Image 1: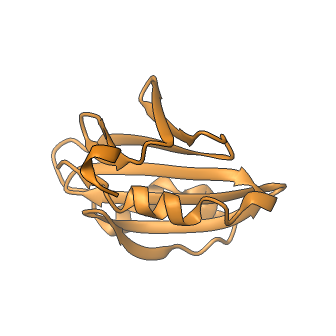
Image 2: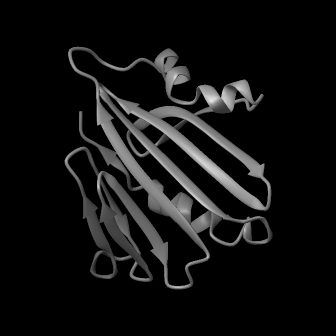
Length: 136
C-alpha cells in the first residue's frame, strides 16, 4: 500500500491506516470500519484507566464472558499494543476479538461476519490492524 492510497483514522486514543476500499464511521465511542462489500465489520473502542497502567492480567475483567464460555485467549502484539486475541463461532457468525493495552489504555476490537465468509477479509483485517498505534 503506498501512502497516497490510504486514509488515516484517528481518535483520542488510537490511529490506524485504511486502504481506499474501507470506510470508517463513528457513533458514540465506537468506530466501525467496513469495506465496500459490507461483508464484515471491524468495531473499535477504547478506554483509559485512571491512575495506573493496565496489566495483561487485568484483561480477564474485560472478557470474563468469553473466558467463562471456555474460550482460551492467544497472547499477541498488534501494532504497538499487547494483549489477548479470541476467534470463535457464535451461531452462524464468525467472531474475532482483540483486547490490547498500552500503558493505561485498553483498545477493544471486534470483527464479525457470517460464518461462510470467515476467511474472506482475514488478510485485509490483519493488515489494517498491523498499522494500529495506541497512544498511552
